[in-house]
Structures are given as C-alpha cells and as structure tokens.
Length: 124
Image (cartoon, one colour):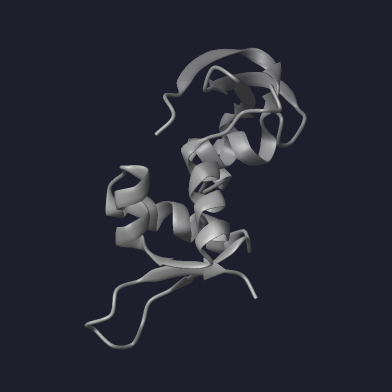
C-alpha cells in the first residue's frame, strides 16, 4: 500500500474547483486537494482520489497499477493467486478488484459454486 500524507491548507478543491479550506492528500508523487463538502459526498478511498483527481509526476506506478498489469498479463487469476504474486493480503486484492471492476477496467467474479474461489479477469 502506498503511504499517504494528509495536510490542511487553503486552496482550490480539485473536485469542485471552489477556493476554501482543503485537505491536501499526497503519496509523494501525486497530490490532490479536496474540500470537506466534496470529501463528505464521495465514498472514495484516498487512492481513488489520487487516481481520479491527482496531479503531479505522471510516471507513478502504484500497487494497484501492478495488480491491473498482472490481470492483463494472466487474463484470469484468483484473488489468492494475485495476493501471493504481489505479496499482499487477499482482502486487499478484493478491495482493489472491486475498485477496478467499478471503473470498468477488469471483471471481478464470485462463482456460484462455494468451492470455487473469487477471481478476476480482463474485461470482455
């Protein structure tokens, strides 16, 4: 997981563009400014905010990026396999898979058979 630093200051919200008191969220390479009103309306993780509204170094590769590349390379793999390869918790893989599935980048599948494991695959 990417360490994120949060500081308060005055500035322009990257979401609604109003000038107000904002929280500056930074992972050292990208940053995003979000006002309290927008932060309250959004059910986003800090990493989602950085991906969607962040600005800064364009060559940043996060662990989520590595996960997406892995899925594209393998075409299909279980969350357990992805966790082992990326040395992350399976619960983390599931959160990332849900995020990328909501964005339409991959497909997260929960099989009906309880003996089969959840997996991700490239979007058709």
